[in-house]
Length: 354
Length: 116
Image (cartoon, rainbow over all chains, first blue to last red; front, side):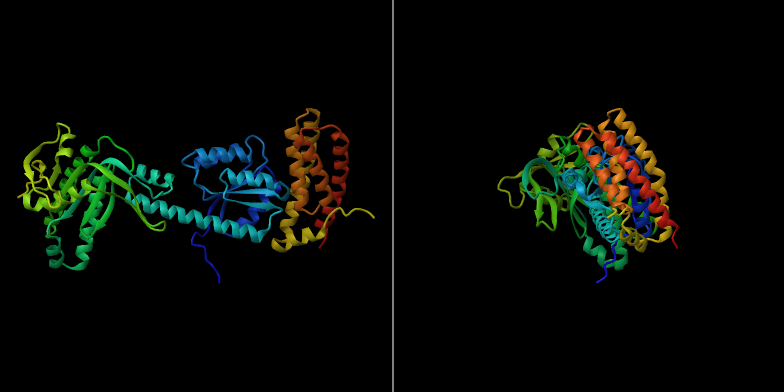
């Protein structure tokens, strides 16, 4: 069966001090449609890699200035460059050096004299892997801030959990079912997409991570996986921004004679169990525990209270002077034996809520 | 029995995966670079620069093998090993003999390039 690499032609850097080798490599690679750049030693290679993007590097070992080992060493410590795959090109009688290179992070090796068939297969496989990794990275970036994405990628998605101090947030659209039934499916999906885009912006802007989206509701976490001492303040600021963005969105909807929405946000802070849940194949970063349940309860209570943002006492105690909140007193929450004090965050003149 | 200077099968295999013109280009490049590498080899020996000696010998070994100059490549490899070991004792005579081998290789490769 023929396998078409999804990756297609790549941008390749060939690093070799030997012109005959460069010609040999270039010939095989250009035939496959790749774009080739040359470097004659390790120092040149690093310079050019810091200037332009490559999908793959073919690296000779023995070179003047900086040799292949030194290049690999520098690549692994450079966060911008460490994910670019490297294939070591080496003579058959240097297998010990090849082993060392693989241990230092090289992806694969090719032996000289070069075999064109092997060259093509190795490069195809390498580019495919790189492409898949880039896709995975892109996916993670869609659901997290870059700090979180980096942390996720560097810890390698270990599934273990831990206790962390964090703020959990739940948000949803009030009476969404009614709204969905009142308009076309296309309009509903478009509405949800716009809504999620706005909410993600507000949450990422305050260092939060959206870890669940179900229908019109979402859950976000602040203070994990990257610890953040200001998680409560950040969460509430994100909520204020969300309400503000929804208000702006409503003005636009009104101008187009389209349906307007209201959101409810519940936030609770405290100890949560954070970690990846799922299987090795499909996992999601999430938080569970009493704090998380409380945030969900507060969110559903926003309808009853007629307030867009409700927070628990623990969150309220960590807020700066800039944020005003009204004490709604103790509230009996489902699933809790003791009543909890609930605070309504004032959203200001921008968003008069009934 | 005279030693085989150039392994034609290597060159033919190379030509079949590329074309003869390209092989001609490779030969020209090698014949241009090799004398410089031999000069570097002598200079490195004079300066007792084992690392430089090793690298120059390494390139000659590699290029010789790519173009089917197996005996030449093997001689260059011996020099490379001396450089790697950091012991250049007795290398001078071997460099001279490598030069002589190169002259033969050059003739053989030119002969091949001028065929057809």
